[in-house]
Image (cartoon, rainbow, N blue to C red; front, side, top):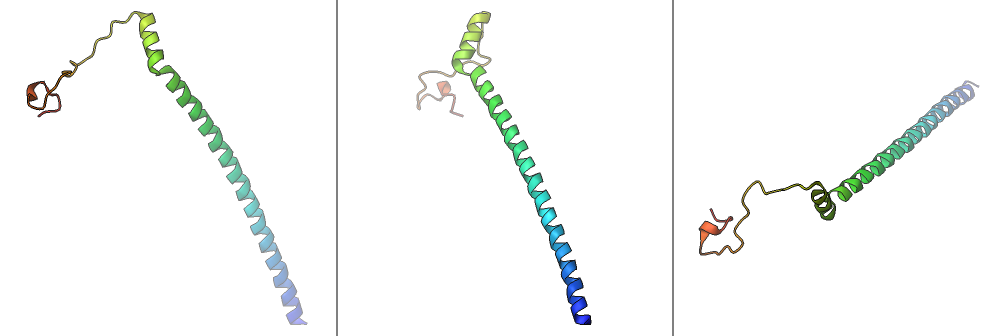
Length: 96
């Protein structure tokens, strides 16, 4: 009789523990899905921002903006020599 009562008692304890573990698993799955949805939303927002940056920094958009604003842009440093030769290191910007 005692063995039967102990078996029933521990079976109930085991059932309660398993139900608790199942509940925790369901809660973790819910939190995981919510987190993935937030990640997807942030990724979508980031991709849209990257697209806007790419649109505004495209060479044709920049040249159009510079042309509309009448900006006289000059390079900050002199441009390298166009016809650098390997024998003449003075006109070669890569030579040291």
